[in-house]
Image (cartoon, rainbow, N blue to C red):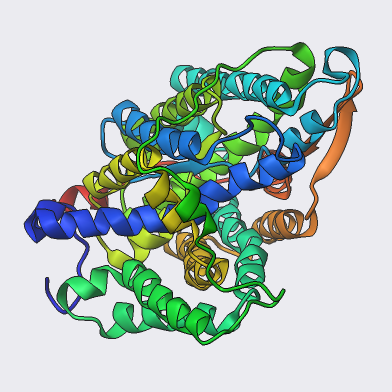
Length: 452
């Protein structure tokens, strides 16, 4: 690898051993957030009965990613992990106590919530069909860089609070993780330069062992490392799959959330395109990425898993490593699938202190926002124009200001739109109605000259 750290589109030139390490790095990047979703959801339901399983979550993160790559002609280096957008829906279903839900066990409520997510995933197919029939060029006229750029910026900024909160659990570890990533990314040589995340995890974990041995505790007085789950877990175990159930009430709670996640999907695909310098919205096409994401979500929920979504953490890894080969992401998916059948290893990785996750996320989330800024700059968005300035301003304030989203009721059921969904909708509407939209969506011809 040269000193200029040029992008690598074919990871095979690095050798299979290094490819496996790169896949492991992507797996570590997604792991913390992916398993956090079932942990949070199980808390909503009181942790009683069979609720969302970490094993099932990991299995369908891997399978969903592979399925997404199949749908997108194996061109898009995206990883699909657990979606946080549906947490509000899970909480609503957990609190349902009328009709068939009166006195219902938590394990049953979870299955109905998953049924609603199946329908939400299938709604992606409707938008994909519209894109296919109308044409991506006409659709993207409503999603120019003045809209997608600020949305990408907002994705990173809305995650920033989560990163800092995790760091606050034990700042010394977070700072070590952050500094290791920076050092290896800036001054690293050869393979170490493209593995900054993995090195950050490994070195800060060693530091965690030392801190723990010295008797240090977290901000809330708990041990830095907790291996109780590791000792209790078995070596081999089949994920506890369970079939979902369908009810109109749960569907009305969960399905409308797809409005938010579809907007976030478009922002994520735009971010990945900007990072890799490939026009994935044109080729393989937005309709294919929507189909892959939607069906992966429906498949996961069908067997008792959470919704899937393209992961910004892994986009950050792409930006840091400069290795854009989708094969590396598929290796991470395979690691996730294998881990889903090894509960003890899964629990060992789960013991990773959240302060380390915070330190890693500190830079990854910032990278996402930086990619959005680059998207605005490279597309020469003229922010001296009042219309562009207004659109960007409304998107940023909506995404960051509506921290709890907007909740409204349909047929007596509460539905919440996240801040990102509100921002995306507001940006699209303003871009459509304000005069002066001269954006023309074109192929990214420059990508044709990139050596692959």
